[in-house]
Image 1: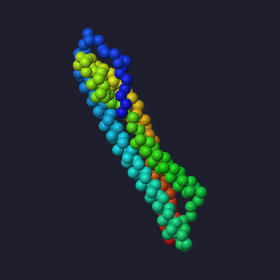
Image 2: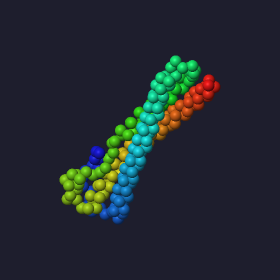
Image 3: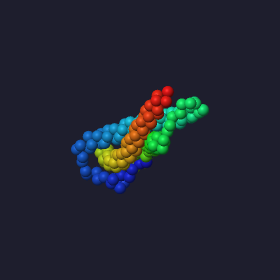
Image 4: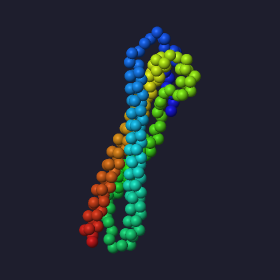
Length: 188
């Protein structure tokens, strides 16, 4: 986590200023930052789910191809795949592979801000009046909230694309499986 730059440029706020709802605004800002970190945890859970599902489907797809070659080799029953079937299979595999990569990238996004650092409180704000310190920290929280919102949005967009591609790839695999199963039953 990287500390944000204060809005006031690091200068002490005027000791003459009074802020009636500073405690309320400060408390709400801290709560909203906490909500953002809950959102991040939820998105990380979804990214992990996407990784597990895409990895499972890809491993089943690869092992299924290997097993079908092993068991159907030199057998009287052969499934006839045409160019369209191979194109669908390659497309499905590519969509699922891309969704796996998007899940990894979404999980990798780790640049979040939380202000202030304890050392900054100790070295910079210790001699300030309490309401002025709260105001400065509130300013930092606003900047951090806005930066975190961008990162959360990026992570959510990556996951949205990843789940969409995973769904399309899985649907294509289901179509291929149904066609192959129909060919098998017609051949028997």
